[in-house]
Length: 48
Ligand SMILES: [Zn+2]
Image (cartoon, rainbow, N blue to C red; front, side):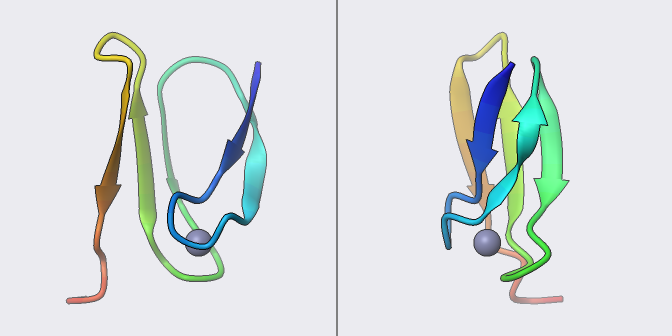
């Protein structure tokens, strides 16, 4: 388990294990973590 925070605003999104895809309720940034690639991907959702 790891503490997951929004890459944009730093809001705590929860304690999650492995790959996740969470939309931040505060700034609407989609936070994606792909465990196999060991990287975080920030997707700017402002166009929606
Ligand atoms: Zn956020």
